[in-house]
Amino acid sequence: MPTPIDRIWPSPAAALDDDALLDATRFPDEGTWMRVNFISSLDGAATRDGASGGLGDAADRRLFALLRRAADVVLVGAGTLRDEEYDGLRVDDASVAWREAAGMPAHPALAMISRGLSVDPDSSLFVDAPVRPIVYTVSSAPDARREALQPVADVVTVGETDADPRRIRDDLTARGLRRIHAEGGPHVFGALLAAGVVDALHLTLAPTLEAGDAGRICRGETQGRLPTAARLETVLRAGDELLLHYLLG
Ligand SMILES: NC(=O)c1ccc[n+]([C@@H]2O[C@H](COP(=O)([O-])OP(=O)(O)OC[C@H]3O[C@@H](n4cnc5c(N)ncnc54)[C@H](OP(=O)(O)O)[C@@H]3O)[C@@H](O)[C@H]2O)c1
Image (cartoon, rainbow, N blue to C red; front, side, top):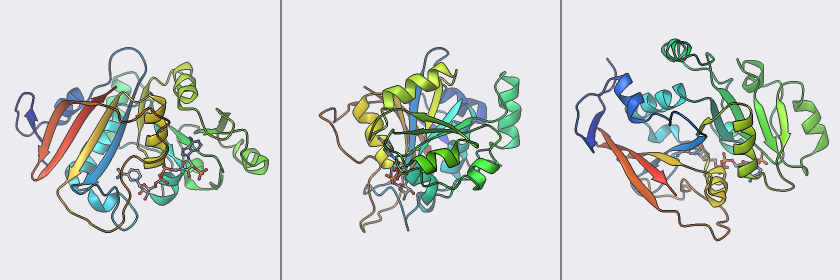
């Protein structure tokens, strides 16, 4: 029995099934679309004990999995990959069946963003990947690390000292990966927002107050582009938790 998630806006509906949740969060039928998915406490903490997992409950995890299900590619910053200990990206069996019925590959691709490339090419992230990962990096990245990753990933240079989010979006589009689902983290979200390439935000508001010094969901230099206005698209609710969908820009 899945954790109940209700829609409370715009049209109330109780206990949405997976198809209804997928419909409420569907990508546009055409064109490139980049959305980001985060969880935050009521007082703006993006982590508990250094990871986002502590903030999430079963409803958040349910939606998290469904948001991945419909994506061509999951885009993640190297900090999140390290801190959240990502493995090779695989969706669950129900998602594989759904994707194959929709004519999609069984699993989404994983694309990461890194300057320093301090990720282990022998890690499960690469070894267990069902789809060859993509690594977006910069020309100043260490040559030895770049060479070490080339056998296990497509390593693509998209800037000198900062990866340019517009080039990432264009490269993904050219690969046919137009449904882009970004899972953060905060510095990557800041860079994506400053470049104006994010179309939507899926934000879970966890019903907790964390205090402490945890960071927020979006960080870094604004380059004069922020703040970004957000328009409320859908409000879902699971108990005391809100699952919000905003359109950006
Ligand atoms: N609440 C949530 O939903 C949520 C979601 C995701 C993550 N988090 C949390 O956020 C924390 C990690 O934060 P973070 O900001 O370090 O994560 P992040 O944004 O995933 O990673 C930052 C790293 O990404 C690379 N990077 C970012 N912008 C870049 C650019 N323009 N060009 C090239 N490389 C770039 C750099 O990698 P290199 O260091 O390899 O050069 C940088 O150190 C963790 O505690 C994680 O649990 C929370």
